[in-house]
Amino acid sequence: MYCRVFIATLMILALTACGGGAGEGDKHAPVKPFPRAETRSVSITAPARVTAGKGGYTASVPGQSGWSYAWRIDQDNGRILDGAGTREVTFEAGAAGETRLLCTITDAAGVAVQAAPAVCAILPLPPRPVIHGPGEITEHAPGGAAWVDPQDGCGYAWSVSGGTLTAGGDSPRVTYQAGPAGRLSLTCRVANALGDSDPRPAERDITVLPAPQRPVLTPPAAIEANRPGCTVSAAPRPGITHEWTLAGGTATSPLTGDQLVFTAGPSGTVTLSCVARNALGAVSAPAALTCAIVPLPERPVV
Image (cartoon, one colour):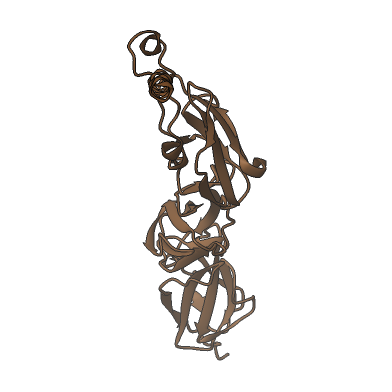
């Protein structure tokens, strides 16, 4: 008899402990906690590569209403710019190397779990390049060359005004053809694999020299046999040197210059030739003159 009463009492206590009866237990159901397994599988979504010192990148984690978020960047290699208490942040990369984004997620029940971190490779921002090469070229001449120092993993973009690129516009070395006399301007931008570059492209101005033209010669007056002080001249042009050759006479002034002074020979003709040369050595087609030597009157016989 006592045994049956004891067993019945135990059954009632067990049902009560398990909430088997209807009533107050259903009215105060506990808040559902943040699923631990789900939290551990949450990862931060962020760019795989970023550029050193550049901002505006975003990172995020999944979220639900009532959750809170605490972000930070490992070893302070970068900084959070906006959204530090939300599921999505804007950040700036630090020095070249890598950075780790960390986020602690806390659910409505106060359960906090660390999301799997995001590791971003930080590419260096290429320094502003310096353009090397000759500072002068002849107008309309091909084969002008310029270059910058190569940088690993970078791309190159050249442009020119006052001329035309002929090769290498996407490489460290470029060739170009000059336009008219005056000035030619080259620019070069060097970008990393993400397309980021110094905001100031490299610039270099090239002086474009006039191309030598066939000289325009002013012939000497009548040339008498053996007469000294005969002159021939070429119209002067800025940056141009005239070079002379002479046959049938003897030069008495330098063979370079806008004017040649000579002594005529005893008879026949004097042949004069002149070319124009600029500072880069470009030479024009020659201009030539052939002048008859006027014989001296015969000495009268008395």
